[in-house]
Length: 420
Figure 1 (spheres, one colour):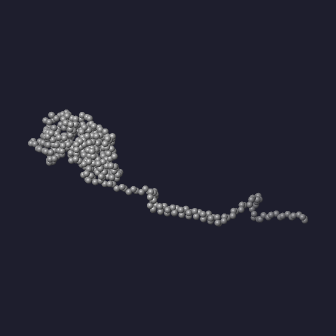
Figure 2 (cartoon, helix red, strand yellow):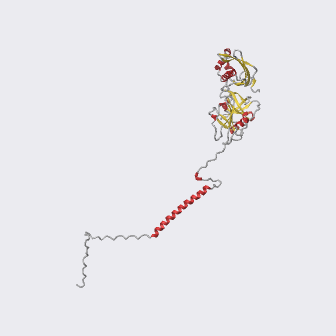
Figure 3 (cartoon, one colour):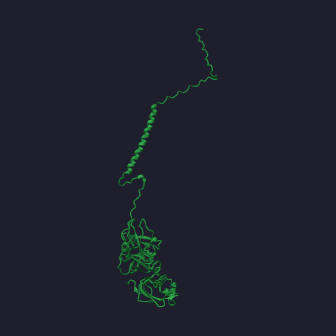
């Protein structure tokens, strides 16, 4: 069988081989990728390490530079940011004031203002300044019929009103000469840390001085004020006037600065206008008026003082019915409430002094009293005056165990209040 290819023997299946139901001829498996060369991984790791070193080094350098800039003084004109903290300012020391020295030098130029008015309190504090002018609070002399000033040593001078301002300042001019110091208005306002003081009078006529803090840290005025201190000057450490207290009431009191005061006293000032009174009946201050005892303070003298205090206070308040129990039965028949009302429509009694005291038989007494009376210049018998000094002798008897006025005898003719 030459020329013919012999058949191949069948493929043997090994024994113990699992049976096949189908011959699987699928594609051969993908070849595995070759492993990455070690040098690529090392390069990546090195780059990461270098980056971390650069970042850490930059942060350290930044902190070092910042610490150096904080520890160093900032250049002139530039502020350090020292942790963005606001530096605590050093407190500016307060410029102190010596109230004892100030009272001795400025006190004689601060006066008491009294008035009989159609409206208002009729009482305040005033300041003598150059040109015989007087500054006070407008509320003390609303619609005045007559005005006087009283110095700390009880000298009396009449005054005329120039006018009042919208913010409560009154400018007056004194009538007649007066040998007393004058205060100067400061050229500028005080620094905010300079201490200030207020000089004023109490309702009893005592002159006082109180510190009122600084402009930056003021004392509330109501804690040191009473109505009689309205118009009082505010003084700086130099003793010059830097302001004045004004207001309709103590609670509403405020300070008008020296700049405005200078404008009000300037020649031809347009900031003030006259508001004079024109009423048939006016009154003075409503506070009690107690006579000064210039005699020994015996029980009888004190009893006389109490009787006259009630008498003058009721008369000043025009409480004429309340005066009747202070009269003896004989005197009450002639001095009725209507009689007193007609005789004292504008009068105001002030500064009484008991100069003599005599005890009568039968437990009566006689007291000689020097006093002053302010009244409208147009009333009957005024003679063109508005303030007179009186000299009376009051004879007193007992009525139901209490002293009462039985008679008043004029000891000398009335004299002008300005007479020394």
